[in-house]
Image (cartoon, rainbow, N blue to C red; front, top):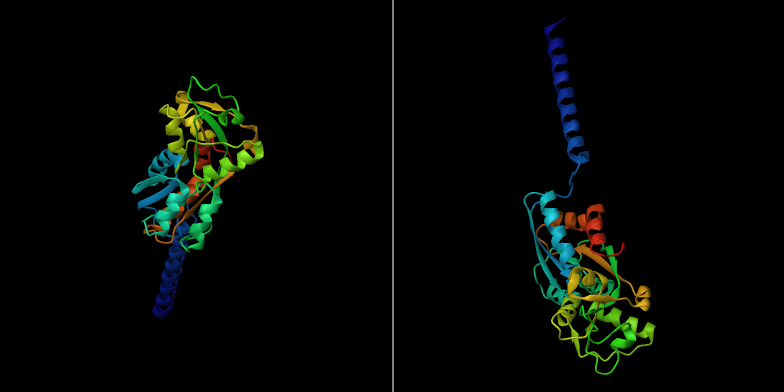
Length: 265
């Protein structure tokens, strides 16, 4: 065979081999387990989350960091309405998890969502009373009795809006001694002995353990708070923020939330 033909065949073989390697590398990168086409999942993100998510999200943050070495999740908990104010006023945050759709909509209307919000949990209200229940409360109507010190969330907070809806459904008109800015503040009034009863989420009663006793409210079954989560436009680590959102909404996140008493979305 002439030397020119041999050179041409060798060159063709090199081209084919190079193309095959390039194609194989692309497939491995885009289709392999845990592939992240949007960028590297690393760095530090700040998650703003409703106060009722404190225990569950603290656990989820730890699990996320273990699943993604090199990441760090900082958590900021408060009433959802307070978090919205912080976000819209420029507080640095990568992810927002709200205790209701109404407050998430405010962030969306401000143009601060990086993508669609995803519903990831539900919750309902329950009465929390001290373990010895000194006021003898057995129902929501008992919490409205004169002389009973009952505490609720403020109306602009998701747990406060839910409390008002439960009152209407039950035909009960509470006269709270205070209205708090977060559900954890309501629970704190009960555990400290400052209140005879507080309207909180069933997850808060569960998390408090022996510190309180839970009293069921039949009408609360029809008043369900749905929790949405979304990545935010101003976040510095977009890929990591979205990965955290996906983690919370995924099977691992759902297992942790379910164990904490949250319902499925």
